[in-house]
Length: 264
Image: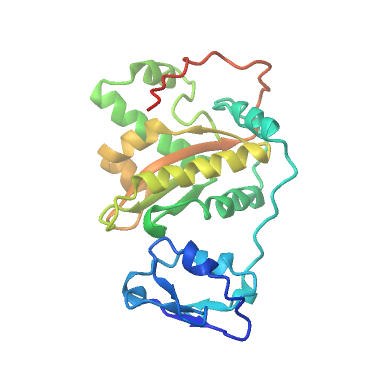
């Protein structure tokens, strides 16, 4: 149940909060001040856009003081062409150096991913970060057991059995995103968006990453792998990233399929 408070002495009466509310839960009274509609308490999703757009800081949602919130980051002084080129240069990294990944870099990526969008601001995403080398090797072995028994993914299992780590690639860090599978809004998309934010932040910080699709497949069907992760009851793994410093620097962009677009 959300509540809205207005400091009329600070209010500029510009109506921006009402215009910004995605569910139209704020009206403007005859004097030009914002007022909560009858549906606000039950329907507000707590997105905070009304607070964020108010330059005067005259709104409070659920008692949150806008003066205690951080300022919105300034638009970085980056040319759009440079940003697009930088994003194009992101590649999946499967060869990692022996450098330890500082926890601070992972925390920066997680904090960036915390601001990823989610359906109706539900924010269902939770994280598991594994940096223990023995645990990562054990999980890779459990995944290999699953695929070996299933007789699938032999192009990964044969080299794994020959001594080459083809499941988690010897990555020094595995980041798992998970959520309550019974959430009111199916959380898979929100988890993937958050993990993508994490990956782009990692790229910006000089880290490399690769989506751990084999692990997700194994965890979804293989009880030993799922139990090893120790996720909360009712939670599912919706994605994972192998993370570390790249061992090699790519000199060229590999080819991609041409765009397939229908304009209407």
